[in-house]
Length: 581
Image (cartoon, rainbow, N blue to C red; front, side, top):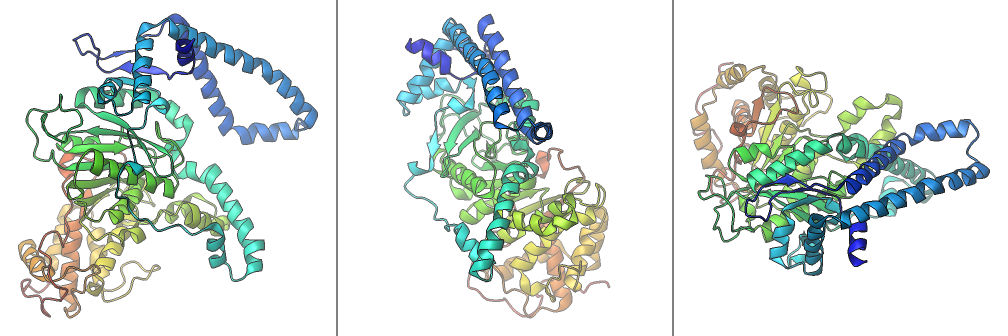
């Protein structure tokens, strides 16, 4: 009976990554005819349930107009629903019986329950990793309370405190603030989060489920990837995949019996990948650092694939925080050997994690934006813009440029010239790319004295430095951008020497460098810094970034030693060429 109960409530088994017969072959799990038939029925029921859920506004309004939304009809529907429910239970029992007759499934259950009873049994955990099954049943491999040192976080303000701060008095808080906030909460949780993160919808995951399974199998079987379940601070379960490029006998490998005999140049550097709003580690940006020879750790947003929860900002930050803790304390990578690589909306969590772990090697941002509000304004009607902005700022506030101000380490930007998502005015209209403002606001924050005029949100390129920066950003090719640099007499070698000489005495961000510079000298340094931080890739949004484009980010402080906080002189001592204006 105990075995039958386990079979009845056990997970769906998909694949065996490595057989135990000495051949170490990978193959699909073969259910018997009873289990296979009942599993198809249950899969159909789950898909139908998802379709009915997303179509609920349509059929609910139809029933209401036809007068079916009454107590009498509800009772009648309840009676009719009893028979399908009883039949569904019967299907579950029949599937359990079919599983109990399959010895391979029984062996799998023995290993699974052995790990549940003895979580520290490393041998059984290694055996369990050879199976691919429903991730909801996967035992937790790591959680934040397993480490002694925790990151201190600012406590979020209560709803009442936030509303009181947004309203002038008590009455406006009660009669205006609360109703408005309730509506924003309803919109964000019922519609907004699905629009911002479409990958969290079960329909999309069902549509690409087989592709995800195949890609995950490839990571495990061809790259010796290790799948793990992490338990975040908010109790969300995070699905992650680790590919270790360190040598086979490396003391910090989790699986010292496998691995490369010879390491790559970057094997001791870990790249943590943060995917886009419809991206999964199985088919996302992990391929770029993998091809470049790095050790790689990918994870799925809350609500994506095996991860539980919903991808709201706090849940996103908690998820990447436990991933960072896992990388540092379980995988044994030092923060200075970790690069955060983010694509598209993944930049939000990567930037916040970089601020919490300032000693990381750098932040690599590909095809991302400065703020989510321009997307919301484009998608929604103008007459509800105040409500949309309130909802975004209070429940889905992905403001990358503001958050980036909290991180002072190396940063690299990739701007995609034909980006149909970030170029708001069209694929070829790179002047509307939301990465342009991200770069400008990044430079303005770190080097405020290099810009003679404050940024005006209504005017593009105001002030000589901003005008030159936007001339460089609007250049259609590398050759034209190089011409802009030549016009301002930018000499890379001389600029590099000058930057090292100046910033070796300047370790603070925002920097005071440039207070006494001439106007053209400020412009020269702005263009040099922009050219060092941003690369321009002629591609669309979803094209995988070639590995040749990926490298550790450049940082002005990382490129030279730290010293006292002072400006080294009042003139450009190394860049002596005047611009050809």
